[in-house]
Structures are given as C-alpha cells and as structure tokens.
Image 1 (cartoon, rainbow, N blue to C red):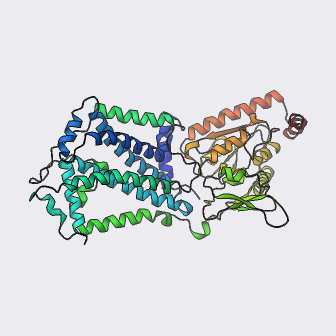
Image 2 (cartoon, rainbow, N blue to C red):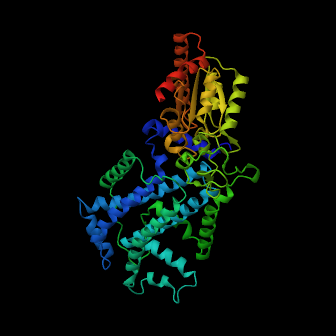
Length: 515
C-alpha cells in the first residue's frame, strides 16, 4: 500500500519539528502519551481546586481561587490549558493513526474506544466549565438543556430552570461536580480497552517531552492566566461570552439548529468517525493475510512472541511425535505487520505475502540483475520512505522490502556477500514507525545481537541504519553521501576486496571466540 496524501502532509510537519526537537523528542510522535500525561495533570490540579470549590457559591469560590496569586490562579490556568492540550493531542493522535492506515482490522477496537474516550473528555470538560457558573457556563448549560428537552426523558422541560423563573436546584451543581469527577474514572477503563491489544504500550512520553509540556503550560498559565467571565445571570441573555474554542467550537452552529437537528448531526458525525476502521479497510484483494508459522521449521525459540507489537503470537505444545513448544499466530489479533519475519532465526514465519526465505531469493535475484561492486551502495527501504527516490538521485542501488522491521538480517549479509560495498537501511523514526517497534528491533538485530541477529562475521562498518520521515530527503541524502564516501575510503584503503573471502577468513575467528 502506498502512503496517502494525509501521510505526506504530516511528514512535512514532522520534518520541520524533527529539525527543532529531533525525532526522539518530536511531540507529535508522542501525541497519544501526551493525552495521558495531560489527564494526570488535570487530576492533580483538579484535586487542589476541589479543596476550595463550594457548591453553594460556585462563581464566588472560583473567584477566591483566582485571587490566590501564588497558587490558585496559575493552578486554575494550568487545569484549563491542560484540558485544551489533551483535546489537541487526542485529535493529532487520531489523525496520525488514520494517515498511517492504523485503524482497521485488530486496531479497530483501539480506534472506536479512542473516539469514545474523546467524547468523554469533551463531556467532562463541559461539566467542568458549568461548575464555574459564569456567562460561558450559562450558555453551555442552557444549550445542553435544550438538547436534553428534545428527548423523552423528563416529565418537565429542564430548560425552564435556566429562564430565571426560580433559582437553580441545589442538586444541579452537585450533579455536575459528580459527573466531572466520575467521568475521569471511566476514562481509566476506556484507556485500558484502548491499549488492550498493544504489547508494551507507552503510557507517558519521553521525560523531556513530558516535563517540557508541563513547564510550557505552567508558564503560559502564569504569564497569561485565563480571565474570569462575569457571573451567570439567568435574568439576562449572555452577551460577548468568552468561549473556549477547544470545548465550545460547536456553539455557533448548534444555537442556530433545532434540537433534533443537533442530535442528528451529532449522531452522524460520531457514526462517521466510529466507522472509519471499516471505511478505510483495504479492498478484499489488497487485504494482507495474517502471519503463518511453518511448524516443521519452528524451533520454539519464542523470539517472535517477544517481538510481536500486538501480542498476536503465543506458544503452544506441539502435537504428534515431536515434543516441545511451537509458535502459533492468533489471527484475530494479527495486523500483518511482518515484524515476526525478521525475528525468526529459522525463517519459519510468512506474512505480507513473503517470508525470510523469499527475501533471500529476492536478494540473490537483485544481485544477479544489478551486479553491485565494491564501491556500490545498496539502499534497502519500503514504499513509505524516500529510499527509492534517494537511490535514483544518488545513483545507489535500491532493494524494496515491505517494512524494514520485516527484513531478515540475513538479507543484509547476502547483499554484502554478493559484492555490495555497503548496505544502508532506511526506516521510519523510532517513535513513529508505521509498524510499531519495527525500526527498534531492526537496529538491535543488526548491531546489538537481538535474534534474528546479523552474524558476527559480517563487517558492521559496511552497514548503516538511517531513520528518516518521507519528507526528510535532505537527511537521507546527506547520510547516503557520507556513507558512500566511507565505502570509497574503505575500498581505497584495502584495494580490491573479495567480500566472500573476507567472510571466510573471519569464520575461524568467530568459531574460536564462541568456543
């Protein structure tokens, strides 16, 4: 599958932010974890605000909090700005998942639960604004009452409570406070569902991103604290209401629609977002089959179980005459990412219509066709990277793989043994791989001995791993140029190199070291 326009768009933004923050600390790569971080900030600041909040005098108690120059004012501001940041981060996270086609199949549960989680965040925010009971709260409460009156739920229209005929019932603010506290508890359950099918979920962003985000919002709350709007007055229609557009963006539209129209529009929008996993599902002829395990070849090493990003592989007892354990793919959880292909030393796994053995055959066919020499650079990458375009630009050879996370390390060895001067593997940034953990495992397989690891006899000086987004053409080009210069220098220093002969000479040393 080729990257869609939305992915190319975010790649341009990522390219700019990577220059500022580097790919490790790009906040957009941590958008999902930032949502959780902001919810924790909301919990901490909300506990402080709850101590001073009074149901009997909502607006006056918030004013007293705001009058606390050294504590209450900036804590209230941080509470508000963290809620806004949570909405923004959730929308960014959702858009990235959509752009990377990580919404359908086994990932549908995460998408749908994420949509529900965003709705709960919005409703929790609305109840929080109502608790302030200023003109903004009055507008939200009256609009919400109008919607609820369209449903056959109440014996009397609750909208009458906001026309000034009488004081608001004492339980109104208690119910809002209860909902404002209870909904975040429900978020914990939704978060558990959201990450239920993900192995090793990242719950918090990298520390510089975490504390940098909190520090930035705290500084904003100190320098630009949110103003206090006038107290709500049910005998007056609110005028010039300061609206938080992250939570109240819908107000200009809904106040012009009948209540039934608001419900219809809301249901249609939510249904559309919830249906995205099925709307974006590939056509049947393009749908990748789940991974499969060749039981005759599997040795039961469990490496595929450790590497699978979605806990889609388990070990079961063998049947028949052979004893021991064997890997089995849980097809209902498999996303066909292909990571397990690269993690299997005996090459017993197939996925994405290929296998490690098929990769080796493709590498041999590539060598026979391209016949790379000792000064030639081979770039290995997928269609979602700029590797092919860079190979054409720099004159390097290009070999395509479904994902570098699905590339078996023996493929690199075959290319070097076949005469290539060097192999540059081009993948996604570590924290934004289209297939989770793919580039991380690839780096460890090539350089750190993670199975299926590259054999010690292979010269690592002739291998590079470059992490670059689709838009980081300059980074990839500079990396290719620098590596090509190193390969030329090695060729000049060693003269004519027989790579096969070098591997044979290194073999006795490796055997002696292992013994």
